[in-house]
Length: 224
Image (cartoon, rainbow, N blue to C red):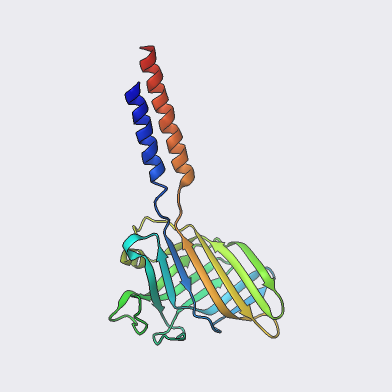
């Protein structure tokens, strides 16, 4: 009976430690300043030419840090290699971040030396925009956010040492813009947060199943 109880504790520890590992987050941001537009039509919004030039990674171990992002968009302050471009349409679920990634500090790389990931669709939406919110929507200011399932480029995950099987089921995109006449708005702040999916419910169910099984073994041995 003592061995069975020790086994139960050991199995429970294994199951509980798994989900406790760091959750991977990939965050894209744009240099402050006017870049791109958002057009609001009813309850939907479309974004074009929105720029991002930095990527912050956490929870990935050795790959954690801040990277430079380059692309066909205009260069930001302190950058000479352009910026990645964000495009979205909440009515269809379209969402892309097109560009490449440089090692930290390589603000001039454009696919050659210092490049971590060559230009591609770094993030692609999977057509499931939800929870669209216009926190502020006036003739002069816009603050909006939404969530959508997304997929990372395999080349990006490989370069960061993240298993290709890792899923990032929800993406939080927040934009701020301004205008003198209303829609379209000029974007001046961007934050796109991509967080790894952690299967907590599955782990809890597995733990319960293991404990039930061990309890049955203990009862059978007690009766014997």
